[in-house]
Length: 349
Ligand SMILES: C[S@@+](CC[C@H](N)C(=O)[O-])C[C@H]1O[C@@H](n2cnc3c(N)ncnc32)[C@H](O)[C@@H]1O
Image (cartoon, rainbow, N blue to C red; front, top):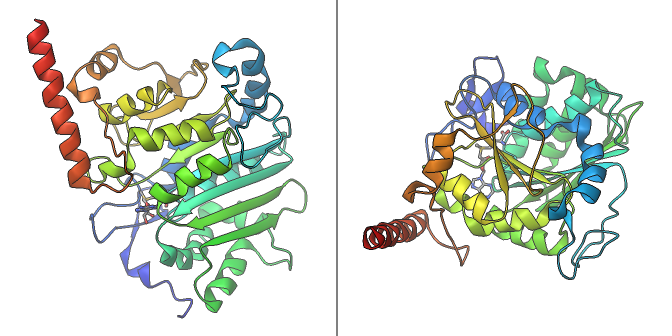
């Protein structure tokens, strides 16, 4: 296999000048046409509020009862078994699900590089992506002007930039299913990317067993719940809940669909609205802690009508108990649950 990005033909320029892809199967763009980078920044980087993250860890631990460790959870580490992760270190740890072209991770990294006052001593991303072929496009993404700071600053062990490093690897062939990339700026923390080329419905439950209560943030970015309901289920959201740190853990996604928010609430999350890019109802911030600070122009309470809608059939979530069901099966199960809900409602009137 050559290092040529054969998916280049499918690339589309978005309104902010950054490149995205069109998926051949669903015909969906990987990003909002308003901007691939813009979407990563507005939907994920800004509402992640990295500036206050370490303070939120400590504060929630003492003041928020929802941070009480669950049964069997280790008080020191916040884990229920599996890999023990030190709780009080200054590593920023996030999970990027459906890594795609890498915008969400790369935008976080660039934000950290642009904010040297951020107190992280290591930035560790774990990413899940099914399509290994996308690997060949990452150098093209990183060489864009919008990622110049990142690509100029970070180097691999031999001094190559990230794009050069990835290009060299792509010339060798496809990477293994699990691979770690390590980069370092001249000054500043190390940046680690643990890449898993896998189906998220297999990889996420496994990770939830191996690394519970370990992640500060999860970015959930699959194709839309209109097309791919099996990636927006209560079962998946419960795994996310377990993966997040009990004191500050939060999930971000672009979707504001009632079925999605209903599923997140059933999984234990508290829900807030984010600004979102190119969408009327914004995106969603789901906090493992019971509350979070609202931020002007960034983090909002849900509208009253959204809260009301969640109590109707619209708020009934997608379910996938076997984690193997097709889109059709997941949809059918929800329709049946909606029918039962309506029948119960008319009986109680
Ligand atoms: C909306 S795009 C993600 C955009 C990405 N976050 C970015 O910044 O480029 C959805 C991604 O989900 C991936 N995907 C589709 N099915 C998947 C699965 N079962 N497991 C993991 N990833 C999957 C696609 O290959 C695609 O890259």
